[in-house]
Length: 634
Image (cartoon, one colour):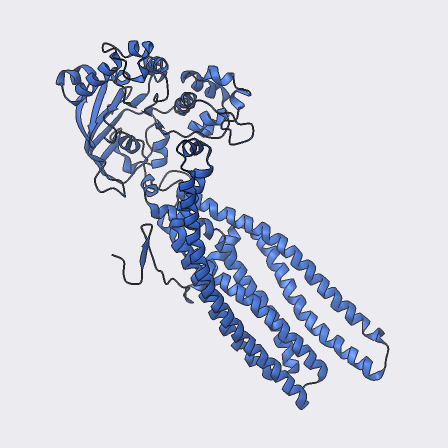
């Protein structure tokens, strides 16, 4: 149970009273500067230089303005020509123009700097999401954090802007201090009091919004998902067929209403803090003005100096208001940056190359052994696999069969190295896979799942992603397509292997489900791996195409080892060995004839399916399919 004062959101413990510790700010500031420096050091230096020029220009403008005002008053008192004032006026105008130009350039460079920093941070988040264990994706907390990381991608730059904004404000304040030292030094101590309400207001507002976005993350993800369902091309047919748009749209809108209601509440509280901070700052600035007026009336301050002091108070108010925004940005971005750092620490990425202290998996696969394998999904109450043991030798075709939910695909994922946290042992050529480099091991396995991806990319890329390092090898791509029976229809496409697939993009072409499956098979063939896992590889093919493919499977994958998962027993009867899964356990094993002779679960399922095909009750009962799946060939 979470401690008092904490809550658990999406499986991740969080502190609802999160706030920025002054002790942590220096370390977070260094981290933010480091990230921005790593992302775009040249742009950062240029923006900082422009900010420094802007701050100096303000200070110089105050000094020049004071001198110019002296000359104007002298010219008025003495009835002299204003020609002596013209140079000061021109210099002041030039300084204003320079400041405006510098600010314009600064905005342009800041936009570019922001994009570069966001890209850098998002690349690190992508590195995490593509390297963490697959079971991490089975927890809602991880998806919540990834969504927060998208928002956190701006936090390093926001933190730097907070620091530079404070620095720029400090430069402006120094200029005002310099002016007041010569005019009314008694006013200077009051400046320190202005910072207190500014800091308190900014820090409170930042905490409010940070907690708000944390709380809303799960619901924001749900709302984004509903938006995707209502706008997706593949989802559109079912949404319309069932008329569910009104229900899903209403749910989306209710989530948005909840978000806005909470945002209004947060905005009211934040606005109250902002008003209180502004009133506090205004009271101190008013006190400074009254002090200047009192000193002027007493004769301690000349009229020209008083005018400069009044202008200085105005500049000070503007600088401090900007500093308040910078403090708010600093406080809020520090909270997000802390979350970002924790995310990277909990899910470290590894550099290219083998993992330290890990052996290399032999390219020439000889034997895979599984012993006492038990696996439970992170959100499940019972294991998906229990005490599984099996053996697969080089060159064999081994099949997994069983009802839906028996654990076939889960076992395939474990054997492919996609899950690494389990009980028991998986040995590749006698070496426990936990001692092998995981990325290299996965490179020796080609796996196509029944829910394979359909990439909205070119045909060549769809196939070449099986081994992206050789994606430009057109001959190899075409050979893989030919093996999968896809070459003929691919050549008929408008641009052949360069045809873009998926109508979501301009010029894209849609394929049938069976054609997509052939491309997925081609992707597996193109990988040229010694161990091939085919999870329902012909589910979308017609009976004739399926029969032809499995009749050629040994020749197509000659020299390689195949693990075949299928519900159709005609596909597995010729396998060297068949493992029958039930409730996550292997209950039978052997070749087709032995399993039939046992008269157990395999024989029962085989007989049921064979009789169904014989009677024409499966696959529409077409003549070809009935002939293909007669009991003596099933």
